[in-house]
Structures are given as structure tokens and as C-alpha cells.
Length: 376
Length: 75
Image (tube, rainbow over all chains, first blue to last red; front, side, top):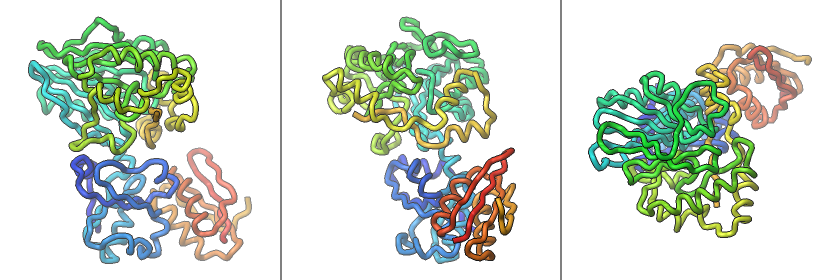
């Protein structure tokens, strides 16, 4: 029997840029749509059903003594192929436990910084989907921003740190993944904050995020300062943490910018997006470190797993911020957009509390890549 | 739809629906139609891709009460 590898072990390899060889045995259509990326990953695809009569076809492509991680959708086919590879003389083969379904759920905590008056800021990297969430802790208290559906991860992390989650915030109503915000706030008896303009149809109570109403974490001066920054959604709100970190949500990414079309109002929201990126953000300190809610390209994932950039550098390098002509900008963010995320309508309705799909269904709704960005 | 043989792969997880289908197909003649019943959602795209790669023709597929049915003509 071939050995298995956990998603945690694989995540460590990727963020540490270790040489990682992956054999993805899903069918080619699924592979082309969404696969493991980042770090120093070399990946080849050969559907498992082509290997049932023998693995010779890939024998030439792979070194028999090299570490090979076999991956499939849920972990069943990869286990079988890993066994077949061992029988064929491969010596260092693993099957990824739980497959892409488990990979889609893995969250890797990465420390971003120590804060001025004590406390720490962490980024939780969801490597399988490119989603980023944040954990701010100070003096026994914590705030979680844009939490994923897997809320146990944040609860365990808070326990390990000996802090209590008091505040849970979403920068906007998400369309690409199911927010863990409301449930996490319920479980921890914390407050759940949403931008009121994104929450007009929600079926539950929440605290409105408003400029001027800073949220204090712990009794030290770690403030979470809301900045209204519409465009991806009409309510999108950014946060300045500790006067040094700008959580941009889905408005501005490291190599791209947010798309305005996921709620069906691209034409109406494009002006807001322009205003936020070319005026509001421009007035902020260039020294702020931008921390987005997503990354799209493997090269955005830095060594150690961080996804971040100095705001001033983004104004020089991010192609989405270099479009002087307003009409060109309008065209860029409304035409030739990438496909919309899988099940994005149902995901939005789930995040509003309008529908409540069962756990397995929620997992399936989220499988696949995130597509929240527009490339300049 | 008429079929030469019916394969019940309900309740089986990936990769078993394909493994069984492949085996059942070996026992049929060219032009025969194999009807496959499965409950694993992944079977849909995998069977489609497998049939194409093997030169078989997926004539029809349906989904009723969480049971996926496929009719594959041996090529």
C-alpha cells in the first residue's frame, strides 16, 4: 500500500518552495479548469482510466526514485494509481489524502507581522482556491476578516493563541466562496459585521461597517478602520489595521484588480471601482501594505506563503492601476471577463442566508477555481 | 433506450465505476450498448472522458433521483 500525504504536508512544501512533483490523475477537462499551483510545483496530468492497464505511459516522464504525489478528485483513484506505481517499481509515491476536495479546504496560517503595541497579524492562505482571510490578535482578543467556511480552523487557532474571537468581519458579500463569518460569530459569541449596502437582502442580524466606527481589538491600539471602497460590490469596505496594513478585500489584488460584474451590475459599479482605485486608494499612504482577499496567479504567492505588496509599488506595477483613460478602463473591466465562479449565484444566496445547502453540497459549490479578478 | 447489458455501479466511489465499466465493456462486442447506473457525481465527467479516450460513444445520459444513467456504445 502506498503512503498518503496530508494537505498540511503538501501546503508546507509549496509555501517553502520545496521541489514538488505531482501526478494529477483526474480527467483532463477538470485538470485544465483547476489544479495545484504555486511554489516549486511540477505537475503532469494523466487520467487514471488511462493507467488501469499499466503505468508505462508515464514511466518515461517520471523518475522512479523521485517523490511523486498522486492527486485525484477525492483520494480514491490516486490511492489506486499510487499502488500501481509502486508495483511498477516506483519507490517514493504518495497519494494526497482527500484529493482536490480536501485541498480546496486547506487553510495555511502565515504570519504577516507583529503589531505596534503587541499583537500579531496572520494571513490564512487557502492554497486550493487562492482565498485569503485574516486573523488579528491583541491582548487576549481577536478579529477575523473574510473567514472561509472551515471555521474550526480559526477557533482552534484562537485556542492555541489563548485569545477570544470578538469580532468577525466580511469586506463584502462574497460570490466565489461561502463565508464562514456568520457561523464563526455565532460559535464564538462575537459580533458579525457586514457593509450595510451589501446586506440589504440578508436574512439575519449583523453590525453595519461604517467609516468612523473603528473596531478595537484588545485594549491596545490595534484599530480596524473601515474605508468605504465600492466597485467589486456596492458595499465593499477595506480595513486599515494598525495604521500600516490595508485589507483590500476583492477590490485590489497584487497583480490584478476586482471585477464589478458578479452581482449583475457591472455597468453601474464600474464608476465606483474607478473612483476607489484611482482616487480613494490613491489618497492613502503609499507605505501601507496591501493585503487582498485573493490571489490568482501562483507567482503572487511569496516565499513563506505571504501574499502582500506595498501600496506605492502597486501604483507603479499593477497593470490594472495604469489605465489613464476612463473608457479604456470601462472596457477592460466589463468586456472579455473570465468566466464567473462556479455556482456564484447560489453562493451569494447562501451568504445572504436565503438558502442553506447541506454541508456536502456547500463543499461541491465551492470546488473549482476562484475568478474574482480582472487582469489589466 | 435498448441496452445489451446493465451494470449496477450505484454506491461505488471513484475509481470503481470506471473500473467496473471497463471490465464489463471488455465482455461486449463492438456495437453493443452498455447501460451504467452510478451514484458518484464524478462518474459523469469521467465516463464521458473515458468513453471518448477509448473510442466508445456515449449515446445518452440522464440523472433521476440522484442516480446517473449512461448508455455507452462499444467502439
